[in-house]
Length: 363
Image (cartoon, rainbow, N blue to C red; front, side):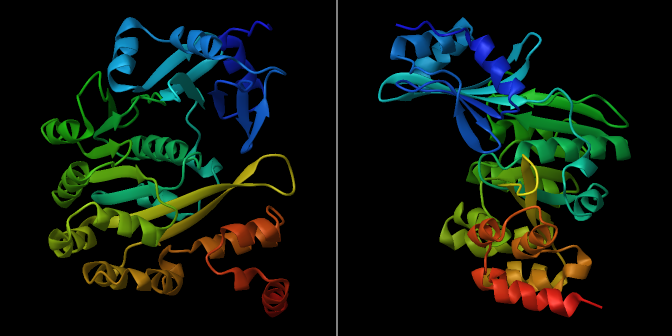
């Protein structure tokens, strides 16, 4: 039987290849996700004992006990001369398996990520709720970290983060940045959010709003004059609003819609798509910036009108995913096929439609 390398070697190889994640799966070779695609790091599969040994070697006794009790574990590890990783350990058909997400040492500058100017604009907000949304692997954590870094440079105050686990490490700039880890510094997002209100925060950053209680506390915090920033696992702006509403019973949704319309400032939805001009991926986004019309739409729960209102409000910072995809196609960053696969209105990306708009744009 082939003997696998140590997990440090697999993590180092993942980083060397420019990968984002290392997968350790029973019955398959260790694999790195590089530009969205899995690449095998060995020519042979790992058996259950090999995978278990690799994973448990990264954990302390407390973490092993938590895994035995909960059957799931999120944690962070630091590998000398390689970097920092967020690990998720879980059981699959009674076998221990894991995924390790690489966390770059440096927080990128917000201006380098490919966002529209609205991201810089919302850094100047003093209160309200900002949501960054997208599927797993769409770069939400990186955008969130870059946003927090920029805010810490712009304003003097206290930024408190609640993370599970802590990923990027922030330096104190004009603001103090206090990072608290779920399970180590506080027992839950909800409890951490409640206590956070007594810690003189100006900005509250929540790694993810996962449940009704956390969402309610976050909206209340935004309502009382704090800037609250968090993430959701949703694909676009309307789905983000629907997800928030669905967290609450139907008899509370009218009240929640009214509260949300008063506190929500912006929703930034993002996806990472394969580039067609060079190796790598490019950011595609949708941005909802709340104005009076969108506020009324939220209050009245007319979610189906959001896209049309976003199109009307382009001059105020809104843009739809289709707006962004069309720009990326026009500049040759993505293919027409990938745009069609990710758009809201496929008719907009037919060859005839693209050619017609290009002709109109000519002087």
